[in-house]
Image (cartoon, rainbow, N blue to C red; front, side):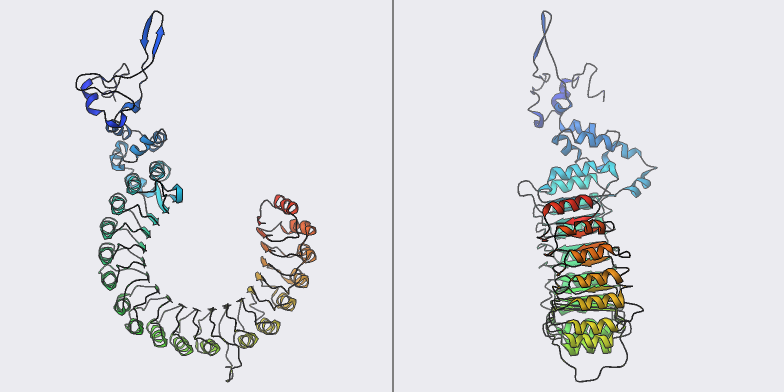
Length: 633
């Protein structure tokens, strides 16, 4: 430091050195004269006795960036650098340009290097919308070093005035070698330059998530692949300039890659998928292909090379036909596949799903969404082939009827535990023309949502087939009544008992169902959802209060209950609710306040929205009394 300051406090004792270091960046602070004149500092004249003495105010800020750079990199620790960064924007930006390896104290620490690397990467920082600027990113980069190191960084959205650019990412790359996870969403101002800096400075990067980043190309992805060998997860969505070459480099240089998502990238096609799958280092266990311009060839490659894939998602692949799925299933390469989701693929037919069932012997979870050409025959054929299946979900498959639904249950293996059907408008309630089998199914959970054709006849047949049910969810089914539900409730094994029951929007359900639930399953019931059941009254709540021992979540939105019903719940000695929803219960009044306060001894969440007959002052009192409970009002 003696080379920079003399003992009199003047900056640079050698005037020639001053002239060589001063830069245009400090023109506002000092007048510069070349070559043999000392820098002149403007300062006020102060009277001392009879003489006038010019008072000099010497500041580090008169130094050029080059000199400040040398000072900052010699600071003893992270705390000192963080303090200096808070002095001014200039100092912050300058500190953010110093790579970690250029810090003098870092170079001296050799013995503790392994321990330091092991302890880095604890912090997570998220910049969204207007907060996403280069200055904030520089502050994060400099400030996180002394607090455990930056491990995860999320940047979402552009600041229209001064958004994050490559300069901000460069600051992170230089100051945060501990970075392991980087997510960039909806950012057009960051391009290859910034991401290449990340690749060069953050070699421990494990997860990269790029969503709607149009300025990033294959060049940046190649740099990541070559410099980040520990990369385990890659997600590319809506990146219009990333194509086959970038995907190929990832497959070639990232031997630890476990998860890959490629969505809505028009330049990624069969060549990119084939290069990734056929690479010698391919070890991906989770693969998602959505909205890509791929054909049957890609599915054939997946079926052949996907020997370690356990989770597979294929969505919106418009150029894939029945042949592609058939070849994928018959290639016999997906032996370890456990979870498979197919959505909005026109090539999915009855033949296709049968091939999938035969070619994936360890498949446990299968999801079909918006597959218009799947019919009852395909569903039954799949059930016969997939003997390891534990969970099946189909949504908006309008060719599936009651015949396919029960054909699935008749032919499924002994491991099927959960069945979900949603928005299947081809489903109609009818009496089947053949006798039901004597044996029962092992089904534990059934969920049906927005299938208006399902009614009491279907529930009666479920009652005969599925005595081991523990969870039932019927949402938005106007055709079911007490008769169908009572047969199902009474047939369920009392030993295991129903644990979760949801009847949202089942407008014809009355207190009879609630009383039966409390009577037969009050010892096991934990969650009961009666939202939109306008015919449920206080009588049902009295039964719940008397019989339900383990109930901790109760949803009563828009039910016909009054203060008396809430009082019944409050008087119960064994009931210990944690979640209670009374939203839209218009017959509740201010009189229920004391009962709510008593229930609040165990409540963690309470919903009082749209309870128009309860005054705002009473709600405020409840909020004050139940300060440990989250209350919506």
